[in-house]
Image 1 (cartoon, helix red, strand yellow):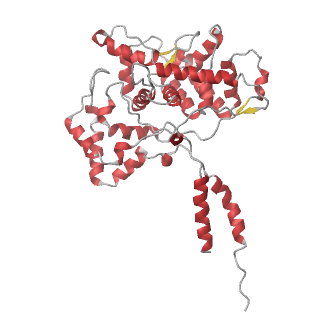
Image 2 (cartoon, rainbow, N blue to C red):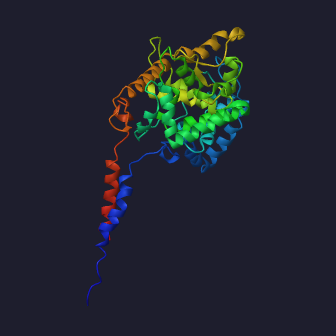
Image 3 (cartoon, rainbow, N blue to C red):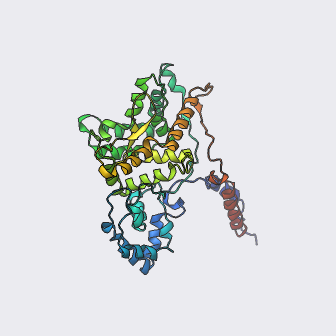
Length: 395
């Protein structure tokens, strides 16, 4: 009796069908599932434990009991709330993090600050960021061929604006905040929300190119274009408020509080010599994360690259010193100034290249620590291939 035809000839075809999936196996995206320990995932685990769940709910009710009157004061946290936080010290909630571009970011940050009540309204020099650092895997490619329509002597801010216009996503997001922040229709909260959306969703190189384009000191038109990137006439208050008032507004909002903590983590000089805590790229990312919040910084003039908060310390009374420390953490921050200067130098170098092709991929010398570099896809491909071979052997 003839044996039925073997299905094995189908195996090569099956392998070919699965090969594209294998080749993409190593791609990494900043989604909740990719985070080492997302606060949303940690909260789900906590909900499965009645004791943890009850403690979390109690901590959640503590938020209204926490208060402080100035950045220099320790937060006033009721003792029972601190004891509840201690009960969660072995929970994954205590080490959970969020990501700037993740879905449900607001929910994630609410969970983070719920389990860290002492950090919620503490010293403005807090050095613990709720955000996990991730490495951007895909290189940025920009189409330079259409820049030929601009005059050769066009300033670099105009060129970076053109690069954004040529990118569908960047152009769409930029138009959205431009419309929300323009003219008599300006509503500050809507404008700030659209600004945050742009700097969260547009590709980082496009956003940094617009915000940190280099200008010659004599080119005030370029400097004005750079200052107007964040639509300051709408996104910033018309009259400078007290810096301490801005601080109070910021720490009362989980998102702004998180961005401020992130900025203080990555742009904080560790000593009088100005030694910076982390890499310049992280400082710039944290700086851009503040745009669209109550603590939105901007360039102070059209002739230099100095930045500052739009606030004043006049009338701060016995809190004058604390207020000035807060203001100078932006205006006289050596880590931030060096990071901005380095990025502008890099952008200037891009346009000094002799472009022989229409597409140019700029690469910066960063992530020198091998542990911070994106891992190659080879191990993932190998593991998937091995699994496939084992399955096929059982066919």
